[in-house]
Length: 239
Image (cartoon, rainbow, N blue to C red; front, side, top):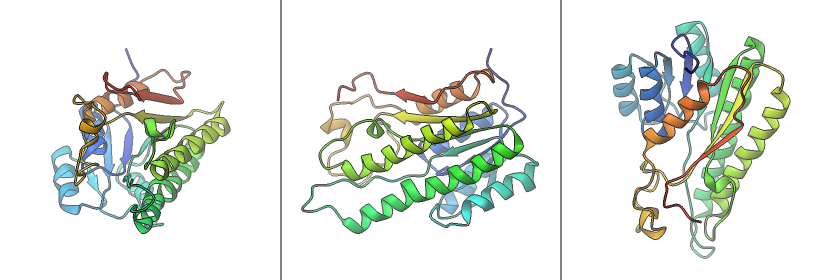
């Protein structure tokens, strides 16, 4: 039987859809109390009301947001035990046509903002002598593909940070978990002319709930167990 999560408090970024929403629902079902953030205020407020959670709408690139999220968790619940560092976007394309400004915006969200969240919460967890930092990377944080190098680079950055923090926090009660999903139907690829499930021949991509289940597995391990990284792929994934 896994560890009981019912007394814990979690902050989830990118919570209004996809993996963030699925994890919020899963953890709420386990009795975890939640602070949720995303840019979509309407969707976020509706989800928070449904899950009896606290909503903090905001842009993840706002440098003040991580501290405000932590303060909200402490003010509302008196503690913070988990952060799901999940907010992210994807921008890909060939050299000749990729939008460089959109690439740089992706870097600010996927790297700069994620780093701020990671360090703010890691410092709190170290001071509190407990906690789980869960960083959402990607299978693309372990490989590159033509036209997707910039996106892969943002996820390689998450992999590097996660491993360095794990090493720094070894021997403490603070867990660092890097999740590496393959293709997930999340809405991340909305607007693409050809969805990756077609171009990569993966009709049965993962559901956000699949990733949520993997995260719950990692969170419920005994205190002496560490899962530094965990990859989850659709069964048709080849490359």
